[in-house]
Image 1: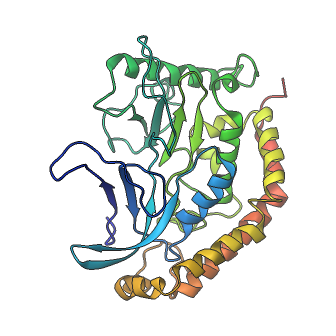
Image 2: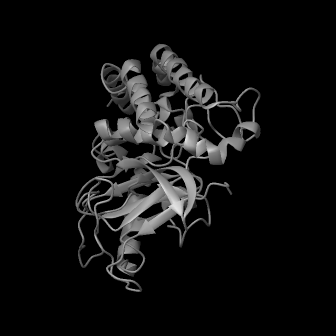
Length: 352
């Protein structure tokens, strides 16, 4: 619905061919597919780049990205972020290409709006009313996915969800922890909470699993973070995970909150130090340089529009937008430093 269109591009070996071609794009690892994300609501042009940059310092994998100025049919479209989608590949998640005859397979699933993709998974969390929106299989791709793999993926996620929503969910041997990479979930939770991501866990959420491995998470879509949500002003004193699928239950487990607290304190000295985050913002502004002016020569009218609901959130200049982002980082980190331990108040289990 944005005036600035979003694109997904693929490379093929020849005109009219269905055979994809592996290419290195803007210094990123070779693949056939990328997303061109055109920041529209985010007038800093930085939010996705910022979170992906921080994520690559913390997670096993997070999308690589590069800035580019895009022309379509010779017409200048402004600044875009060229992003690796969450896919398997030699320079991406590197998941196994082949599964077992039983249907056991590596997979990627995404949670998004109902009806936004193909056939959703009828997993326990959805059918039991524990989660919102739907899970869709992104890997194996539709053309490669077998019926036995779909059945196995459904059962695999349901097994985890049944443990998560059971009375004994916090048991380290018999509970949900046996099915997930706890560090991956804790790190993603922290990044989403720092970013004030209203969509955390419920939309634009990707989970993957290697054959024989555990569920892990990665990052996607942060144009709305740090109080840039389109529909209402975000609360700097809220914990967004309390309304997120899966996380809302994990946050009732003292074991998980212990891990989150310890990891947050560690990351605040490095990747999530205010100094480091602001340096990424500053370096990004330097990289964009005069491209900002060229971008807003096309999209500058958005500074006169009420794109964001809520008083005082529609900024009138690029400088004001960057200042708002920097201030949001400072305010949010101050709150979390003082109140992150409040998460223990909702724990319903003791460590076991």
